[in-house]
Image (cartoon, rainbow, N blue to C red):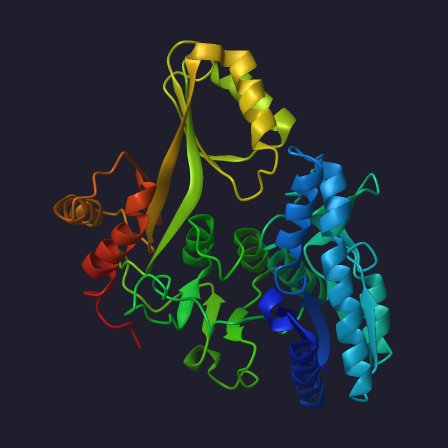
Length: 408
């Protein structure tokens, strides 16, 4: 039988009734003739609640101890779902990340998977069991419990699908796919039927929450199709893009089309006249991942370094600020109250029209970009945090709404 990997997010397993609903869907998949591996997130807001509890004990909690704490949430979900499947007459077994063979590097809070050794998973599938895996976690080569950062359960699922040579990986949540913008911000946002790996990865890196960027990286390298779907939807049919989003190698769009708008509100900018190498060594020592680095003369003090930092996996910001102040003093400046808004699409910067039109539209709406950066698939404007939502709406109306229909 072919193997299918399904991942269910926190809202999908938020309480006992929802866990029973997931168990019924898993059993339907099993009866359709598939071997099934299920990856689960922590129930509801469990991870946020555990983080809040940790902050009450320590303003700057140790990253290793945070991993020990946060990894407990997924273990609760996996055990409950396994019980629910058994109540429906299925045969299920639950595994932690380490038991299922998820091997990571030695970083805490935002570890990366370096290898999957799914021997126990394969053994249990051969016995006809449904295997339920705790997402978001693994074990380092030093046998330390690690977690994979926000959205890490997606990464667990796709990495497991690749290791098992699964037919596809289904990412199930409370939304029915990836949209052209956050529907809570843009009422006319549309579900995207098909995305390329690169477009999806850029959307995820830019703040879209439906899929995790590292998960897409695994899918791309292994050629695994990802189906982003609603938990309450039917099982995928012959055309899974009809009621969800399919992520695959190619998407049916003309080059230069803008496929979607994503945003991040919880970022800050670090500017310093110090040595870029000294700064990056400091950030590495603190386990801080930056984005959009610009160094005027790399490794030469006094010429200026600018770095955008996301707070998503930064849980000891106070300690980081203190270290920067001690190392760079008045030469460093931290800029808060900003956000980033990005438009994404294949070949988006083959010409400057998208950049020029987007910038002009923002200025006409009274939004003054503070900085701009680009890649082959993305244009990002840094704006005041209070302007993020209006910038999303303006860019969607200007660059997404007029797009031609997809190619057949």
